[in-house]
Image (cartoon, rainbow, N blue to C red; front, side, top):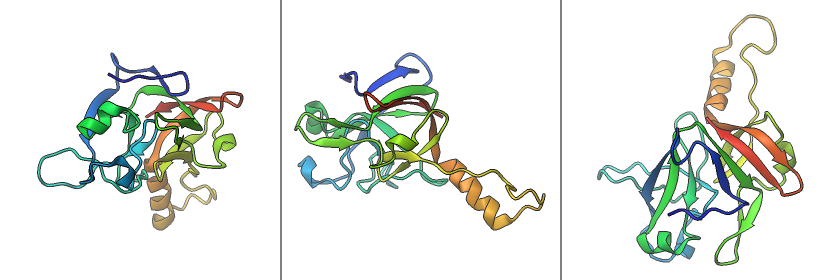
Length: 187
């Protein structure tokens, strides 16, 4: 069972709508969560390891969204003792949900967990597209195709623009400067 608080909350789309939860095996052989490269904490993002054994395990490296790599929001991480014991994290798959994400919060070990890239909270305003950069949300810079207006498509430039668009995981719907939270519609 996921225990959510007012700092991190799923506002729409779960558990009875478009978002689907899945438990992933933590992709690190250590039994001590302090040895993990990726923090596997609630509110951070993770990608899956390229395994061939049929298991769905997380990649222990820092996750960043891209055209070739999907990222999933952890809603129950190692800051929860049951997750540590089972060595699994619960993530939301797919899109169509709105989640309230704090800039930072304190976990059960009293460690500070950062969910939004340092120095980027004020840039995550309403309407801004966000991507995952090293487990944290950051504003995405997404240009339009043929922004220079010459109607000539440039394959290299347009490919870079399409790859940047593919890295976007959501759109900021609300920005609360007092509580330091943003509400993100995850695509």
